[in-house]
Image (tube, rainbow, N blue to C red; front, side, top):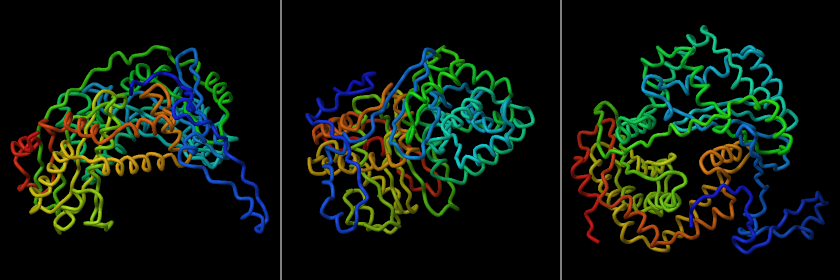
Length: 483
């Protein structure tokens, strides 16, 4: 049963039948004694349980506080907000990202210069990002500076001056940022992919917003967005590293008790997926950049993990990294011998209630049709012929990538914030490992058939795409094998 609950602390021992094993402290011993007194390394299963507990508390106004105390000298603390470009209107598209820029331009307590000096004097880092469904503001500092970091975060969220001069200056900054993004072909391809797959819905809009909106956004738009979106039930104050949970709860009560307790998440509307195609032909570009995707699932859907493993099964490849025909991915084996193929990447982008599952590829104009044939051939093969051996390999790769991302306080803090917003809790590693292990070849075949077989894909092509396979052929090839 993949249904998520809001339980925060799980009896991990009951899940896999293994006791909780506390890590052994390492002692600094003379070199001669080190070899004879070395501690026995943990097994993989034991290591899953030997991680700090994620503790959570919900304040009276609905703000969630979540921490993982690893006892190191530094920590990362931040606010993760259930708000992004998906929650904007067509007129205000770009406000969330604009507000991220304005947060560091001065508050009622600190000027921009004072804010920058205060962070630098702590030796810390202050950063932020905006996505389609989430916004985050976070700081990495020494553990002793946690109270000061929380004070700064609350100040930039609750007390930003949003001065008119700063707003006008940031318009130019964002417009230059848009020009820079337009030079990053992969970013452009995925923006087009969203616009064609979710056409007419907020998920189809870009995060930065259109140029006309950037030029017309007013201070009133920013203030209104803060009052409606930055509410306590839609926020998580997360921290990882050397942080005491109760201390952070006290700081949250001190600085964020005044946040509104209203929850506007009921305004959330479903974004429909539309199988369709858009191409931007430019024969002056050296390579064609193409993305093909079908509708996936949301974060909490039972098929999320099987689809992630299926994505790993398709794999990725880049000619500059070597490997070529020795790669495990069958697509890589087939296209590596073709000098016109440059790279491909299988992706699974998830949102609350939908997602995009597909492949992004780069190749010479003369091999586009062959490249797409190999990808669709592999998709269909997985639907009917996925084996236990290759699924076992994909699960191992998936777990390795998953756990390697949790290296350091910042990625751990981000993982806590994101999971608290999407699941209402942080899934313990033993449970996550258990759910991955429950997936077998039959599950992969069933899930692949459910989401790939005879489905209408969204297709984007940029560059010299005259030879791009006709959409009707791509659509018919989604089911060329007969079950």
